[in-house]
Length: 438
Image (cartoon, rainbow, N blue to C red; front, side, top):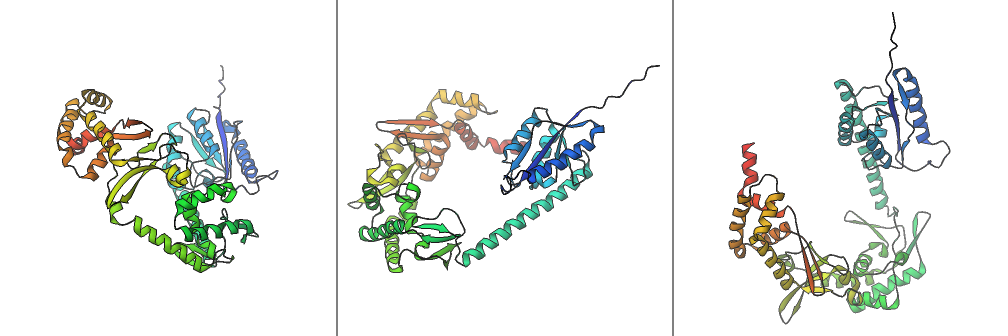
């Protein structure tokens, strides 16, 4: 009589380790090594079950457990998808994730490939409903701990701000950091004072940017001083020795660079400029190409702008590179008349609505919508276009157009692939009918 020897199936095990901060990772034996040592010992204890350690290491040092954006975890998931892993071993469940939502995603990915995972310090089995319940309870406490820690950090940050303390980050132009405090840097401070003084004298950020560029004046770390940088500098309360936090202002520990009278003069001019260029007229002015029109020369977005002359308002789309850089910016386009470019785009849209080849193309790309439904929708829309409110025309343009690229003497219009299909569904109420049928 022959006796068959039972063969234990091999179980490929991967150890995953994580540490939230990079502190101590340079040590010869760090926290990640300690986690891995415990996990490897646990795998050895399961040798009788066929467990063995795969060669690859999956260590995430300096990554939070609050999300899944971790390089080693992504490699681990890729290897699981490829069938290279049977069991994931962790020192503690919160090393894998501290988020219940992310935990659910990981369990789904594991189940798809019949992969289980084990924790060295917590006993559970993900193949049973009780094991899943245990894990959910553990993850609930892990997420609670993370949220409480975040609240403590926010409270500590707020308390420090109220004391006027510098809480880190890049110091603004005019300051350096010494012993975790802001200290005035003399040369840069003179630049800051000059900017405030010249703004009070000229009242124009455009002229100021041009003047600074002509003199070769740059900001912190050699960054150019465009209009955005100037506005941020003029609005930074650190320069009068104060610290702003969530709308509240506190006396700072550091010394200010600007005296209060100069600060108030500059802000009076800023407030006056806002009144002149703001108001309800700007809000009500239509800009159907906002967010989709770009300058092909600079690759930058073009923003709606306007100016007044002899009582008339003239609208433009202005290249943001030119707008921020002032009159000396190298953009050859700078701006285009809003009415003219909008007319070109709208003519293109209406031609597209009447073009049979576009109907067929959209119908072929759609998911279940019939050709006659697309045709019927277009028949409804084109005759009433002129009667639509500007805001509705803008919505339709942005639904159908993905991007408008403008250069000297040329306009390129890129269609939004699913836009016409979506429009047809809206106008025919197809989506509502399908929901009702379901």
